Image 1: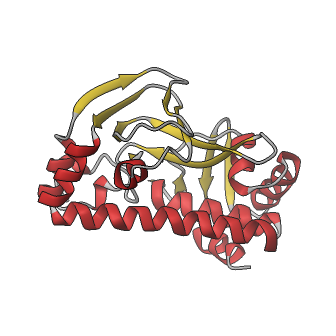
Image 2 (image 1 turned 60 degrees about the vertical axis):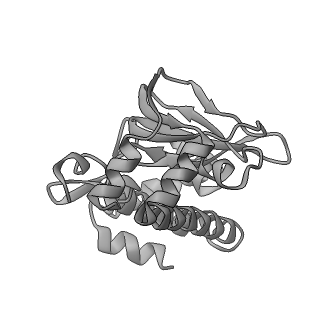
Length: 228
């Protein structure tokens, strides 16, 4: 992997690209900077541009039928957001909001599509990324109705650690900062229930928690819990 890509989490789109495709994506559009709590994309709007996150973290949310805001995903530097609308021209299906300062590159639909046509490796990687997001959403939907909260929590942590984990000695620290309410929203359960499940994992020495910080101490045992 070329040096300028090593700063992106291993599960991000950019980290997995060959140098030529990564360069094409990193030079796409124009550089932008955004402050904390800035809405980058809004659910239902007809815009079709894409954003390549270069630095920082964003939260992807959607509105439930009951009118509540649900946290659907976390995206960090190296990830692409907004690509579905650029590909199919349909209104946005979720809202993307910055969590802290974010640096990104913004590109219009025509430029993005042209880049995909001219760079087959990038087109293939973007297709794979969209597929991975669909798999994540499908697994969450199935788990919400069929698995106990401890298993659902373990599965979310396994996937976050695999995508964004940062090795720290014998542990793996999640590369995203989540509050317990945000984690509960990802798991799809009430916050007190997720808090109890997290306490169980902590007592079993599988995870370690701190203020907006979570480390996986035993990946094998966490994977075993996730397997049910």
